[in-house]
Length: 252
Image 1: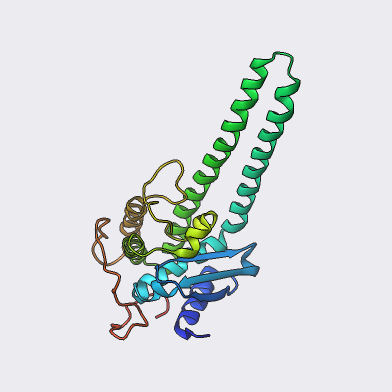
Image 2: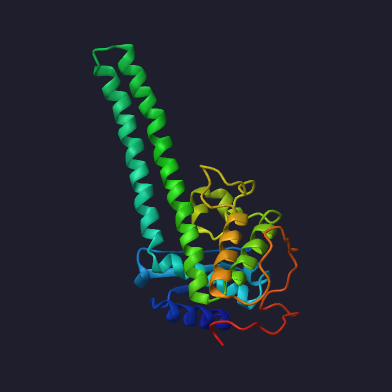
């Protein structure tokens, strides 16, 4: 337990969410980010980067951790594994249809063209559905995280900081394995900030807007978070030498 305060915070948030305590890891990575994985809440793990600990304050960290615990509680890793498997199966069937269906079709070119379209459009459609589900689960984890931590504005602030710093600080492991991008709280890949049909994550501005609405509904204290704010990579985190006293949160 190299970060005991982090461990205690995860423990308290997991208890608030009524899920088993996940395994906790700190990754040596300058980009602020976090992710959760595991086939079910009883076999889950949560990881944060050193960049995250150096960027956010303790209330913001609690919001990020609560978001990831929301993924664990909602069994999102299992869901995304299933959708990826289905997408892979669709691609395999499309290939099968192209190589066998097109050749045996008596209509000649018509059958070949139909099989070719299936080969192209089948995997594309499956991928679009997979990405849409991923974006939906991110919104749902934001909602769950805000409810668990009771601080939607803290999570909104954390998302803005993470997105701002991540634009300037690359995540080398994620760049080498882009298939893992959907796991992170903010897309770790460079040039992946636009909200479109192929995005694994919703646009941060849209997520912040929804969290602002939650804050108004919950009566959260403080001003509404601004989606356009930015932060420098040297922002102090809860373990930095210039750390200020932690704000009020679910841990006390």
